[in-house]
Image (cartoon, rainbow, N blue to C red; front, side, top):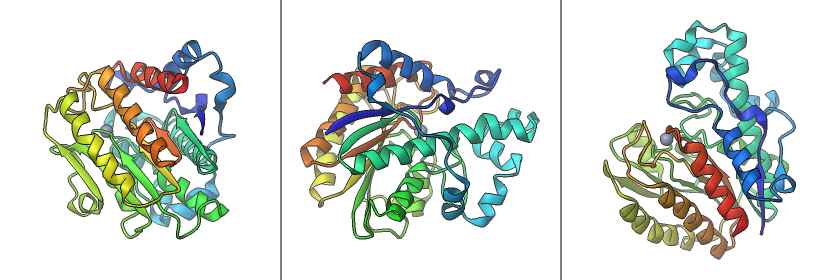
Length: 312
Ligand SMILES: [Zn+2]
């Protein structure tokens, strides 16, 4: 299968002084892409870019009317992002600096899904906003890009209503928004590995997960990878899928500020290769998204992992 990247400079969340109030590095997408360009000679020709942010029309179909209206209110956006200091910004800056990058990320995941379902593995350098749902945003997530991508594939006919897809969510936090998007949709198979004690602890969304891997505080890379491999085998053995969305959050990293795993950078690169190799063996295309990651090294882990995979 072809191996591609999706990137747009609009992914980056550039708010002056933001690093003082939140551990998310809003420029990490640009840093990761610059590293990939240095490491991989043909990265440029393997890169696609969304034409613009996701359309109002796509959001109208996907979001509830109440949440659509709420996104015009800066308090909704600021509270979903859990950074109270941002409430001091005017609405037009909240839209430009916060909502717009997530609209670009969602457009990137939709573009990646269109490519992937036709037979490719595509790494979107943003996306994976897995706490957002059609009726709400939370946990630094405003728009559920996987839900929007599945909607788009079904509406465009690239995915039939009987086609199955999968979500492998290896971000350190439970993907409650993904589960909520597909609460009653049995065509979507979900594997979710997360730190048990972290949010979200919603029992309804946790019980929607088909293969759950709840890990203890302080779980090592050795234990993590040994648990993941048979779970992936089980996931792919449960029947064919047209496409898998892989949430490759870098927050299981030992230096992360919002989770407590002890995986090294090598462990995370190995984790990504393990998932992509398992999918390749099963003949299933993949959309990879970078999801959460709240350490100063997050961009470097992404850059290394994507570069290694492009050159393997
Ligand atoms: Zn996370």
